Picture 1 (cartoon, one colour):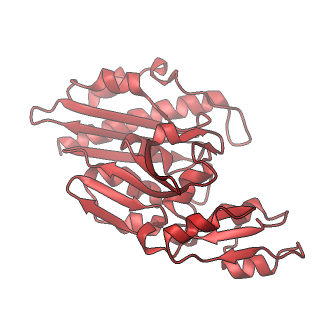
Picture 2 (cartoon, helix red, strand yellow; picture 1 turned 135 degrees about the vertical axis):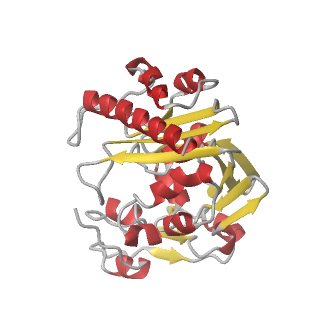
Length: 300
């Protein structure tokens, strides 16, 4: 599959629909919220999801482009907390100077489409699109990320697992804009993202995993966070397995603790890319490999 990324203006101008959509470029988040009150308004960030979804039908009638809003761009560290603006691109995230606990997020950023997609696609757009195969969701879930939502009523913050409700469904209300993703560092944390697809690059995930562990001076696991994507309507944390791993020694044998029953929370489907059974088996193997790699790195 080939996706051609064009400028917003060009994409609108060549639409087969004779009613060319209206493009708004607000100068502030407050202005964007006012524009969002207009009929048929749709938020646009990178456009890498919106335009492919409308390749065979008219584009949204009114687009509000928030990609240039400075307060929605970039990463800001405040002690152990990192605030990632919703319009921050995957390229910016991949290149950011972040603690080791964030390695899985930077690794995921490099797996999202081609370089052109990474240059345009945004973390906020990835979450709001809410695809079960969204590569950004597992590492952010494993980082206990929260999302910041702005509306005329003010700000509210939701845990990511409360924001992602299902396939293409989120808790964002029509008058809200996702403005930032908030993540706290994990002291001593190390992490890995792994993705299985039909080929190495430019592929929708068959299954993907994000694993984070923190280890104390005695070599025991003090925290474990594991998330699996493309195996349910939304990415899922394996919380029972996480609890099982805490207190265990971070050795290669840790993988023997991971059983198929630990993945019972998953609800994969059969589709063109894989069967549900294959997805379960692949997720189990990827989690085991990630834990083995993290344990080895801890002693390296």
